[in-house]
Length: 74
Image 1 (cartoon, rainbow, N blue to C red):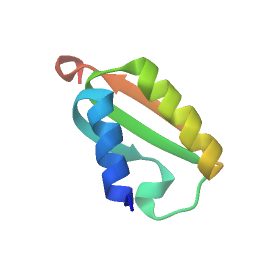
Image 2 (cartoon, helix red, strand yellow; image 1 turned 180 degrees about the vertical axis):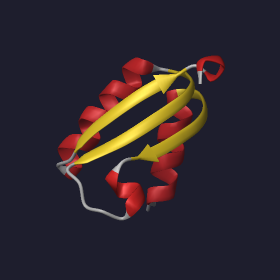
Image 3 (cartoon, rainbow, N blue to C red; image 1 turned 60 degrees about the vertical axis):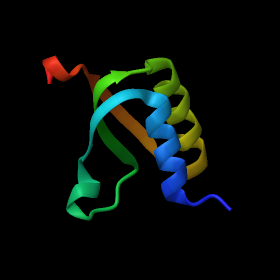
Image 4 (cartoon, one colour; image 1 turned 90 degrees about the horizontal axis):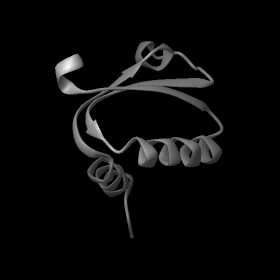
């Protein structure tokens, strides 16, 4: 059986050279929200990221906003 930690690890590896991920917004303050805000830092596969976000949104019913930075721009 595959656990959530293994799924997250797999997704992170597929994203590319990811150095940091930040969760922003209401969830960080323990509040409910219909939007998840994420910040990705690293050299990532943006096509895979877009596909992953669309899939997760459909599964959990929440909108996900994200932005990706190269490490030197962050």
